[in-house]
Each structure stands twice: as structure tokens, then as C-alpha cells.
Image 1 (tube, helix red, strand yellow):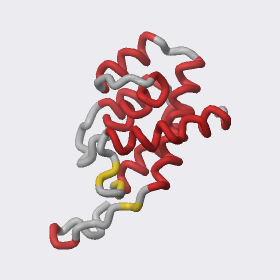
Image 2 (cartoon, one colour):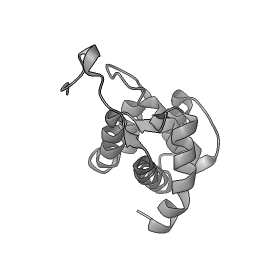
Image 3 (spheres, rainbow, N blue to C red):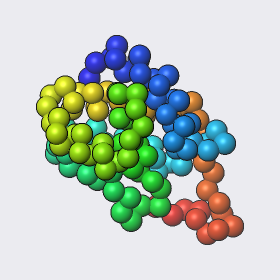
Length: 131
């Protein structure tokens, strides 16, 4: 982790959170916090490719975790591309610098989420207490 890089990227990360709709009305779904927190560990314990593949695919999740991988890419490269293109970029550039960039971007993204409130669960919809 490069603390200087992370600190420089926090404003871009906050902007990406807002731009991609990860935060809505000043609130972030707690599941986004969980996914971004687990990304770094997944990279360290597994690989950048496997972590990116998980994030790029919505799967069974009720939040669009692919927005997080797109936001990380935008923080790093300043461009908006699809999650499939981000995954291809990672596969084509699977090296130490790319790995460090994505870890730093994920940390900046996680820290930028502190600017937002955690979204309240909607008890009327029956989601209170769900895991």
C-alpha cells in the first residue's frame, strides 16, 4: 500500500462513489462497504484476477458490486469503462503495479465511503435484520 497515493486518490474516489450511484441521497448501502472491504483481502489471499472476476459479476448480490470495480478503474485511469473491460484490462496487465494500483484504489474507495451515511434498512419491506 502506498499511503501517499491513497490520500491523493480519496477525492477521486468520493467523486466516483457519487458518479456511479454507489451513494444515493448521501447514503451508501452497507453491502458496498462489505464488498470493498473484502476486495483487498481477496487480492492478497487469492489473486487480483479472481477478486476482479467476483466484483465484475453481479451474481446473486442485491447490490451492483460491479460498480465498485468500475469506480476503482476510474480512480486509477480516469476513464469510465464497463466491468467486463476492467476485467480484461486486469487480465492483460496482471503485474505488480496493476495489483498495487487496485489495492490502493480500493483503500481510497473504502475511505471515501466514510463521507456518506449508512443507508437505513426499510423495515416495511421486510429487510430489517437480513444478512
